Length: 180
Image (cartoon, rainbow, N blue to C red; front, top):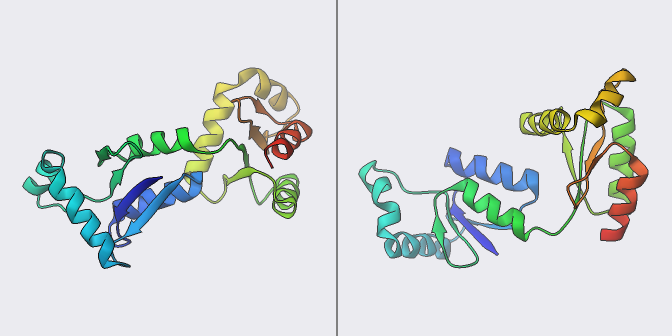
C-alpha cells in the first residue's frame, strides 16, 4: 500500500488527507505526531533520497507530505501518488449528488443501508465535488442535453467502473450489486 508521511499541522498534508478521504484512495497516512516510528521512517526516507529533498533543504522546508509508492519510489508529488493510488483502488461506482436533493438523499441512504460498493460525492459540501460534477456534465453533452431539455440538473449522476456515465439509478444499482 502507498504510504504518506506527514502530520496534521502541515496545510499541504491536511489538503492531501482531504483528497485521500474524498476519493477513498488506498493510501496509508503515517502521522509523525502520533508515533516516533513514523518520525524515524520519515528521517530514513529523507536521508535515503537526498536529491529529492535538495530543494526542500534550500528552502528550509521539511519535505512533507512525502509518499512511498508500492514499487519503493519516493515522491513529493501528490498528483503522482494519487494517480498511483487510483490505479490500485478497487472498482467502484461513483455517485455525485447533493444532500439537498430528495432523490439523491434516497439513493445515498439506500447505498449506505445495503452496504453497496459506491463512492458518494456531495457537490454541496465540497467544491472539488462540484468541479467533478461540472467536468462530467461538460464531458457528456449527449446525456446532459436531454437532462437540460427536461429542465433538470442531472443529479444524481453515476460513473460506473468502466467509465460509463449515467443518470439511470437501476443501471448504477446493478453495477454496485455486482461489486458487493
